Length: 71
Image (tube, rainbow, N blue to C red; front, side, top):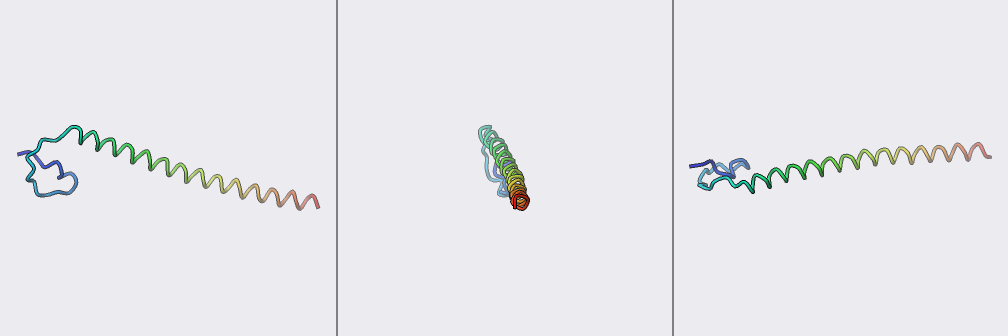
């Protein structure tokens, strides 16, 4: 009897007599890839947002300096 395909996900019953399905393995790889890509894009957006906030604050300080000099 083969190992249960669900044993990778925490199932310990070991009653499954089903062969491993290559489509499920491909789906698992696809899920890993998409999760990794989504996490990377979220972190990239966060870093870009930090830069945007910094640039906005710099612009505000610059406007205050220009306003103070022009008086």
